Length: 617
Image 1 (cartoon, one colour):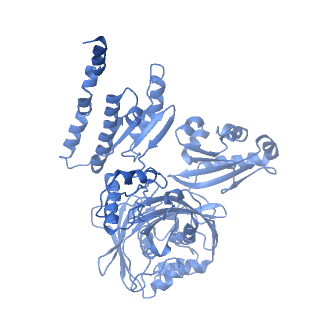
Image 2 (image 1 turned 30 degrees about the horizontal axis):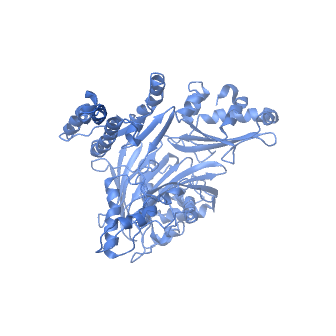
Image 3 (image 1 turned 180 degrees about the vertical axis):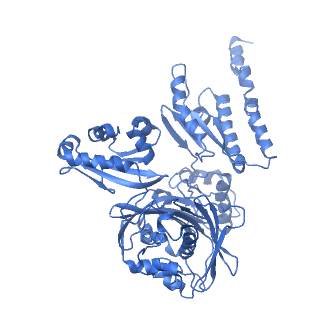
């Protein structure tokens, strides 16, 4: 054998180490305890609470890397294992996610640990709902990865063979990621193949377009779009008509406070808060890429939260935005957030969940963390039950104040779900709050079935602390019409019908001091700052107060409500006060996500001239 041949032979012999030869076994060995624990779980009847598993993959496993074949295979194998554990463990409340940190070295390993640990801690936190996610992390940056698939092209015809020439000719379309879909499960992946088989069998063309989305559109791009601002003017008569529309009657003495404007405690029912927000829904028709057919719109769920008692007359302004768009296959779900204001003060917040029949199949996600969720009632007999018979004229009365929804598609007029919504809410208000509207905080319902005029509505109630779980049925048939519903009450009358307030925010005191300082030295501050700052103060994850600090025009001003600003800060009332008290560093608040900034972030440095010892933002 020549030297050259020996060299060739040595080159053909892989230079495997013992560790590399054992890599195929490494996955099973490293995850033996996890797999055994999973098998044991299947034999247990109880449910674990927020058990979190984090797998560590790498960029080499995701993208591949020269000279790291076995390592890459092992790391990608961890991702597949993690995804499967996420699916199998979900019913046991086990969440499994994968991180892919930037590779460390002796110079960077301590820095990398510092940047990776916060992500791991959040993914392990009880409040984190993430499951089956893949995240790249490094240098203080975190990004989530997902699969994306082109629409592709069918390259065969019925009763004809598939050829490589057909693949060649369609290659540009096969690789075209315009309007790409994002399958997140095997079921979603197979859905396209099932459609392909159907299209080939029916000879309905060769392009695998989504079933519901209009060609060239992407409904998911509508997320974040704001709708035209809507104004709603009303008098005490509208409040009275609404009360009659949800079943109130002068025959009941305790109903008079909602039906007679001369009553010493004349009030507007809290659920009237959905009425001014309804008009914002019509703005969905103007949002690009949604292409809504309103004749196919169904009202799926509704959430309403009150921040102060509704005035019995006046003009309210509603600002809507598309919170999320979900693909349910057979249809599209739109989450519409609407904030309603009275003279700049936030009065109420609505989240409409509407289902557009036949508009699904565009490759969007199926769930959203932005949705206010329903809650099942306790597994026991209800604590209280109230039954009310609807009148034959209930539909007519109700549509006088809520005309947007009709009975199209039904053999006779029906009560819209918001009517049942109003019935159930006033039942709870009577049973547990003595009709005190200041006790009402929020309501969430899912609409299940229609109600026909003349049928009786039976509201079943379960009290658990300040939450009243409710289920509404048609007494005559037993059909559930409202499910997963609940109403949260204030312990005390913390929402007043008098001066506007939002349940006593601590930050109000700080902004009052800022307003005083601007009045005293506004012109000097305008010269130093020359900027407009916006503030969005949140509570329980919802924006409840907005401020505009104008240090650009005139002598400066501070006013309640949102206006055009150079930079906008979003922070919770609690975290705002932590910063004010010096317990929370503003920079750490920003990097941890507690403080969010939009616009010209550099202008935030000028705030020190305004806030001084009261805040260090």
